[in-house]
Amino acid sequence: MVDLIGQYQKIKPEVDQAIQNVLNSSAFINGPDVKSFAGELASYLNVKHVIPCANGTDALQIAMMAFGFRPGDEVITTSFTYVATCEVIALLKLKPVLVEVNPDTFTIDPVAFEKAISSKTVAVVPVHLFGQCADMDEIMRIAGKHNLKVIEDTAQAIGADYKMKDGAVRKAGTIGHVGTTSFFPSKNLGCYGDGGALFTNDDDLARKIRMMANHGQSVQYVFDEIGCNSRLDTIQAAILRIKLRHLDEYAAARNRVAAFYDKAFAGIPQLKTPLRNPDSTHVFHQYTLTLDGVDREKLREHLASKGIPSNVYYPIPVHLQKAYRDNRYAEGSLPLTEYLSKNVLSLPIHTEMTEEELSLITSAVKEFLKPD
Ligand SMILES: *Cc1c(COP(=O)(O)O)cnc(C)c1O
Image: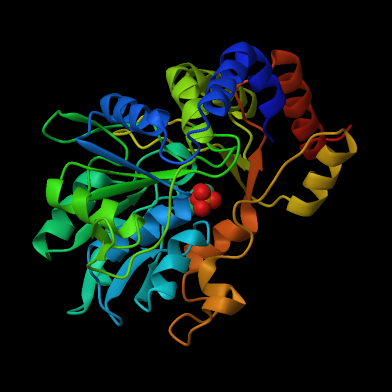
């Protein structure tokens, strides 16, 4: 699904040197590259504060800890997402309230979000799933009306631009009160291990986030809150500084792949190609088809027989997972989400794909649909 080796080969001299420099300095924890990377990412995102941490799941957890939510507070998010989004809510003893996505864009349905608000709701977590922004104007309007915090899960959409209705263009993750992201190797901005970060324009919130990520420490050996220990390694920060310089070119490469697929699959009734939110650019973390009347497993087997990987993000929605079972969400309670889980299929998309590979994949899909 990705070609991390091919991508590394192209930037190998720079990356190897950067890693060697960290080894030479042996400043493995909070070395100078961590601060430099945070500053460079802040300029790229045009946001005041970037606080690095250990992974994208921690970033979500730290955001919710920094807001000081109390057990029983309700947090609204989607069931059609990676489990981490919901996991941290449950882990902090907050109550996950799961709502539908817009099946065209795979992002939270603002109408469903507003309907789910109760007197206990404290926050909403829009997930910019597969690489484009949720409907942020509507989400911000509704959240503002009900005084809710907005935590953007930007793990799959770093670098995407959203055009606000006032014309301002903002980067994904910098529109709500706080944005979170992951630098997991296969993410659009991936390091060579685990990593994550939070973004915010709010000075006070940034201070709390830094404190929560550092054991709740305000001054050395003074602990004002129960925090956690979540840091980005210096080696990972050094790698990310190099990869950040390529991020826009990587997004362009992914968009070329998506355009190829779109064109090849246009007009095929069994394949719904991913629709774009007109207010957002797309960085195509995934290229996800919605199949109509196609045996997904058989198609996957056909592709696999030709050496073509494919994957399903996500085959079981969060509300139907054993760990998250709750009598509020029986099977059938989120029908659009359940439909998507049964019918989506993601094809390989990455920065190193060739036209030959793309032709092979699109031909194989078409051949399965129309054998002759
Ligand atoms: C990857 C991902 C996360 C978690 O990131 P990790 O770095 O793996 O902890 C959270 N949310 C979404 C939507 C993701 O895709």
